[in-house]
Image (cartoon, rainbow, N blue to C red; front, side, top):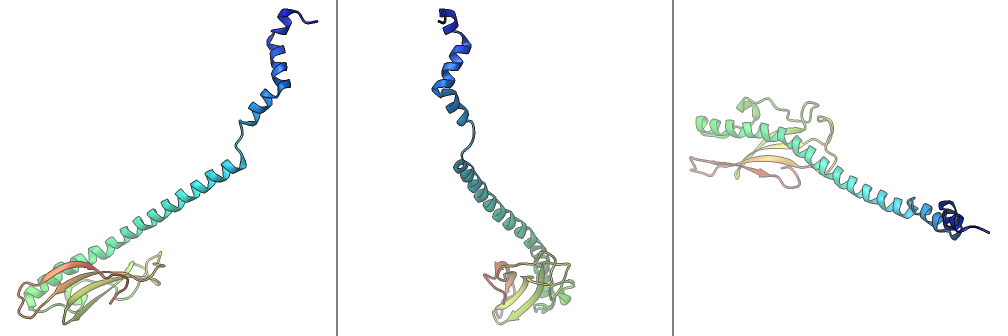
Length: 168
């Protein structure tokens, strides 16, 4: 028979806990279940997808800076050209700018000047092949500078506008 001190000893209490299953139950709760791991992996996947989408958008926005710089310079030179000649330039060469008319490995955009009765616009169209890597894989888009020239207008307005989903 156990004495009173032996019955209350830490070893006896531990043996009683192990026999009752309490210790086993506590050890089982220290690991993650498969369901918990799957939920965490799904959440990480969703967050990574959102992050990659935002990153791609920001990088492409940075590439638009090329077109903004070239078309901004063209806008300034176009205004000076109009003041000097009384007409709009019909090519970037007339403005003294060297830009690619088709996609090259040095630029993300190709550049063209369009003129018609409603105005003159300098357009940078995003390259989908043959341009500076990486090429655009979505639907075509462009950035444009519009200049309205109405008959008798001695002070033409030149402003930035997007081309929507495609290029002229």
